[in-house]
Image 1: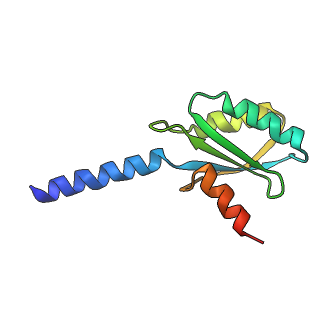
Image 2: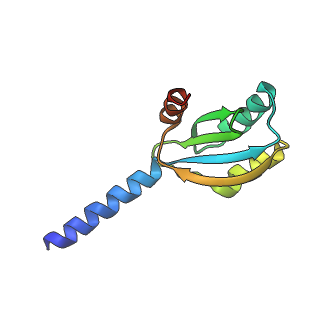
Length: 108
């Protein structure tokens, strides 16, 4: 019986961790702050988006989901493409937007 509770607990921990995950989207075509603002505006209007960070230097967009929500790769990709940019790669990362920003500041 204890093993069943352990399995359920671990499963729930896994689901809550996934819900807190962010997406890192590699985007071609972003060259200026106007580009970044356009992407931020269009992705922030999506219901599941809590925060967004656009890193022009590395050509990535970090999108954090609202608590209890899950980001939809296809919708995010389409929103960025509709804004006029090419989505090269989408991956899930464990950091929040704030954690990613802090990590970028630590890099030389």
